[in-house]
Length: 240
Image 1: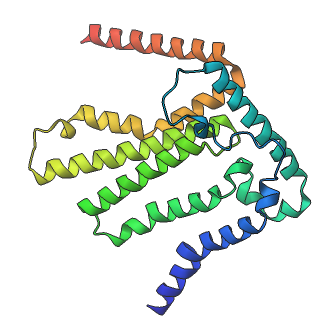
Image 2 (image 1 turned 90 degrees about the vertical axis):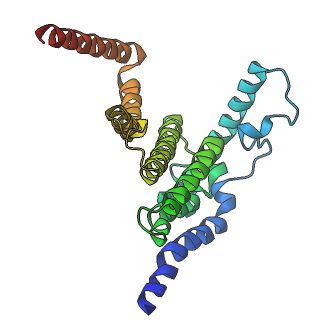
Image 3 (image 1 turned 60 degrees about the horizontal axis):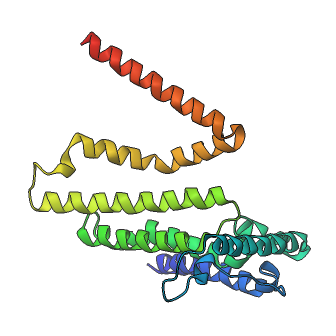
């Protein structure tokens, strides 16, 4: 028991706290102050009272934020004193210098904290769903990664977790109510979950192909694959 308590303070608590202390110490180097800070987050530019949508103004604001962050990234990359901790923040924009801590806490929560509840219980599933919903909202709001494609994949992965936990919740409820004929126990629902399970991988693969070959080539390849699949299914139906 003493060893277990010691390891709790070393890893689930000690590592995130240690990361925060280090990042906080270098916060002005990680997010260098500029005369024109821009909007810290695009969502903060939204007025409290709904206004007519100003598409041009919104895009101008996003462009200004991107330019400010790009300048800060260049300043951060030139700072030799940050080389030792570069692995902590290199994927995140300067405005999101605390996100390595959040990501560490999120992983500890989803992997370790849920084991404190009875395995397969309603409480475990419900707390997992709550955590995944919170994580989805945070990533969707802040969009912390430097690469926009990373933000997209991250958002898909967070939505994937929400759907999986929701599916686990409804399956648990249908089993508890002994609803054997429930729609959540069908083959179609299982296929949908299988697609969701691979959603993040498929999204990442699509974005990699899009960056490597361009939109026209990828679209043509997808259309060809779809047409080939339809011909195959049509021949299979005729054979039967």
